[in-house]
Structures are given as structure tokens and as C-alpha cells.
Image 1 (cartoon, rainbow, N blue to C red):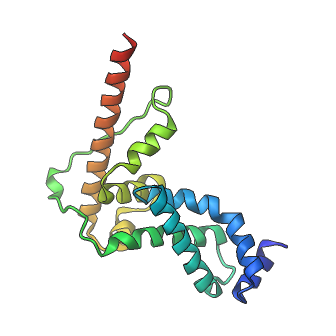
Image 2: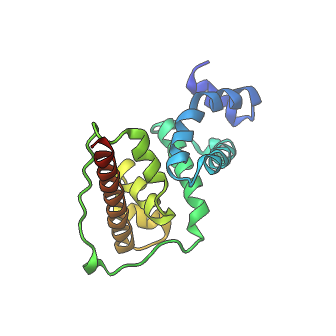
Length: 180
């Protein structure tokens, strides 16, 4: 069965089609949920909630644009919904923001370690960092999605980069001193 037919069958609540759609996209959407969650268990909850929303709203998908993109947006919004009502965003005067460059040496830092330290960022920083750096949203889009202003988005991104830079520098220092 092709994707188009699978979608049509999901629109009429065909449980076999829903199961097939879940199998087809759950690993990709779980990776997205994991980026925006505090831990593995929370990512699993977000994935389940995302699929509930997908099956509830699938009739709204009109075969225009990427279906996978539509699914991804629902997964991101589902994960972000947990944080929207919490006041987790720190408002910082834009004039005090330093532009922190974050450079990662792939020979020194593994992708697993990098993902781990991103996941350990405070919620407000992790959300903005993932949306901006990993998913390519603009500060204007992030501000709208998280119900914050653009300056807050920029400041939280700068803070996230600063924390990651410090963590990576500490890691490199510890690795170097252990190899001596």
C-alpha cells in the first residue's frame, strides 16, 4: 500500500493503516521528540501524544506539501506544548547578549556526547537551541511558537551556546589531562 492510500485509510480510522503509519514514521518522530524532551521516557510520552494528534487531525492533511514535514511539525508542537504554559524562558536585555560561537571538533567530541549535553540544557535553552540550530527556525518563528519575544529567543540561544561551549571545553580539558 502506498503512502497516499495509507493516509486515506487513516482518515477513516483504519487501525491497520494507523499501525502501519506508526511503524513507518515512529523512529523519525521519536528522534525529534527526544531532542525536545528532558529524557527518554518524556520523549516516549511526547511521541504517543503526537501520534494521537496526528490520527485526530489527519483529515486536515490535504496532500499538499511534505507529509513527513507535517508529521514533524506536529511532533515538535506536541513536545513544545508541555513547556508553553510554564514560564521557563528567561528574559535578558538584548544589549547584554554576546554572540557565542560554538565550534565542535568531530574528532574530539562524539555525536552521542553532543546530543547528551544538548539534552541536559535547561528546558528554555534546549528548546530554542534545537529549534534554531537543528531545525532551522528563525527567531521570529520561535518567538511565535513559544509565546516569547524575539529578544528572549536570541538570549536563550546565546546562553545555550555558552553553556555548551563551557561543557565542551571542560570535557576537552578533562580528556587531555587524563591522557597525560
